[in-house]
Image (cartoon, rainbow, N blue to C red):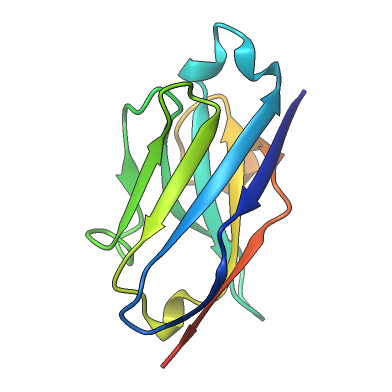
Length: 126
C-alpha cells in the first residue's frame, strides 16, 4: 500500500508561482517503486479530472499536458519519496484541486493510477 499526501497549494495572482509537493509513504522503499509512475491531475469545479503531468519516480519519461507545457515542471527528490510539481506563469484557468497519483507506468489516463492523494487547492486570481 502507498500513501500520498499533497501540499503547497494556495492563492496566487496570475503570473505567479507555486510548488506542490507529494510525499509518498508505505511501500515506497520497495526496489520497484522508483520504476513506478507519479502523475499529477487536476479538477476544476464542474469539470472532469484532467491530466497535468507524469513521470517515473526516478525522474525519467516526463510528459505534460499541452496546456501546461513550458510552465509546469514535474520532478522528484533524490530519495524518490517526494514528488514535486512546479507551477510557473500561472493563469486563472489553472485554478483547480491538484491531485498526486502513483501507478505502474506513465500514462495520462487517471484510471491507470491505483493510489491517490487527497488533493490540494490552487486558486489563481486574475
